[in-house]
Image (cartoon, rainbow, N blue to C red; front, top):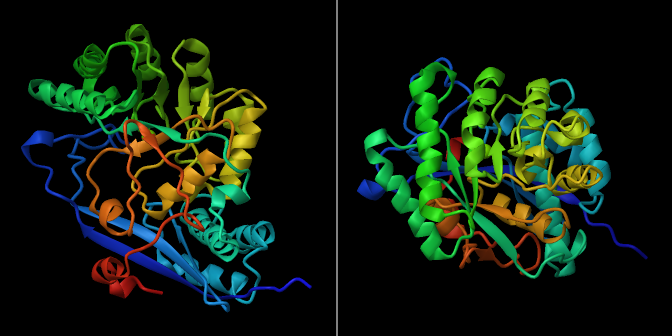
Length: 397
Ligand SMILES: [Mg+2]
């Protein structure tokens, strides 16, 4: 006789704390951004770090935790979704996901609503893992790799006079044992020929430090247009980037198609795309060589798994976006551990007090690798005292 569990409550826990003062070693840094066309560059040094956690509780006392992207998804969306899952069995992941997609269709499909669904879906997997005393990756395909290779992700743009700081940062990652790293472009179409030259200088600066045995990637964070990107790839090909990330806005699929057809540099995108429907054109039109869904945005672990499966039909690797996350990091690692065409994980090397202090056992890269989380559930045990301390009370649902 199958016993059914019931979902009793869904809450948003917005956790926010001041970022660390990174000091002189880091200095001021920035990157391209979607609004860069209209604004002067501004510092990317964070002043606060925030996580939107989702707590799903059940009638057996098991609580699952998920994370809902970082778009600023508000508790109102979760209030809307809550009646769709209360009283349901958390094991019914597939049906509950579809129910939430249909229930949010008028304001959903992309963005905050899908991020909220992502957070709830991840929390369901956490509940199942805890109920079965198994890490989530064992429930969704098992181990495809003993440990997960990670790439160091930061290397933001610096002022021309401060390129030594960028070189020193790359040097640190080499010393820490990373064999792959990703940097950020700082300039776009509005910065003219000089800016384009400075973008090349940024890449050259890092490549000169790390050599050609290290995999190097560079991220334009939606700050370019097609004409600019076509010029840039001509100047960048000699540096043998492993991929050039997200040059355009997500709906600009035809620019991705043109650029991919025009350069030997693999083009990647997907961190700002939602659900498998959103990835359809990117994959089918060969717009990108690598897809980068994030479990906390794309619709959760099973939706990311579906995107990876579709990508595998076209020989396209899935290398998830992982940046600010606390629970999200563990969710993406569960996906990567259990999925054949996920070869490597992103590892944000900016100091992050939430990631390091909010959980009992922080997930850390050691010599360029991470062990998949092995405790039951998603693999994150929140530190109750820290949650209490940094909880944004008036945003509680
Ligand atoms: Mg990116």
